[in-house]
Image (cartoon, rainbow, N blue to C red; front, side, top):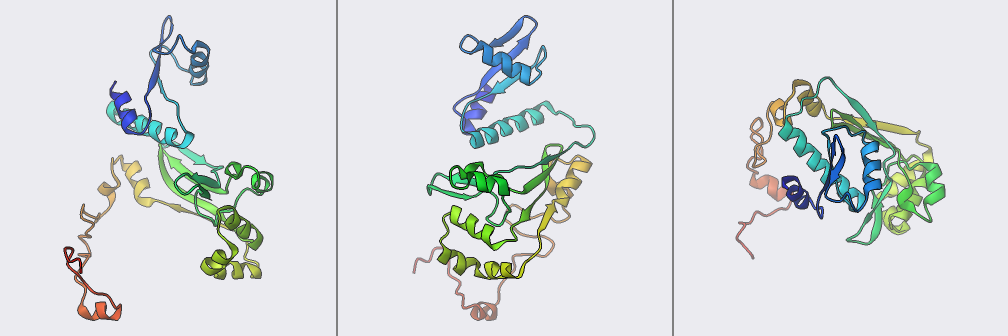
Length: 251
């Protein structure tokens, strides 16, 4: 019941369960879908004493919510991880659908190289199926590095802009310098950015990266090492043509 309440707080309609006992599966929905539950149990290689929690919903929000439940269980059960388990995550989607604006947008950013075969196959009919050349490195369940191959061809970049609804005029105004640079044949290039503080936290078994940062920001956003933010002089404000007003001043 506690996990079901947590699931609803995480945006799910509810949470279903199935338990493996010595005489078979037990579940509140067993009579409605016995064959499906048996397949799920087999897929997860569930053994006697195991509890399976699952739900139904839209893929992205469902995965995020179940991930939060998974993290909650790990914390509460104080499950210890021995050693270091690495995982590469690849084949990220190139695009996602923004339901609020009713349009396609870049999942990572619009400068990520799409899978060219997917682009030719699905761009006009089902762009959400286009994969990207992006990748993440996960260590013991935490993302520790993220990167991608960048677009280096003008024709591909223009096509991606078209798919996310950026007109040629808007693309030229915002990214004309980039499109112009592509004329000179930049080489294929890629990169990855590791989070060193997260890696160190995992190595030493810290629960928060704040424990391994020498001078972490405090709750107010202040930096105790540099005493930032500091007072700004009138000369600096005049140079930037800025005026300081009291938060309660509506004039």
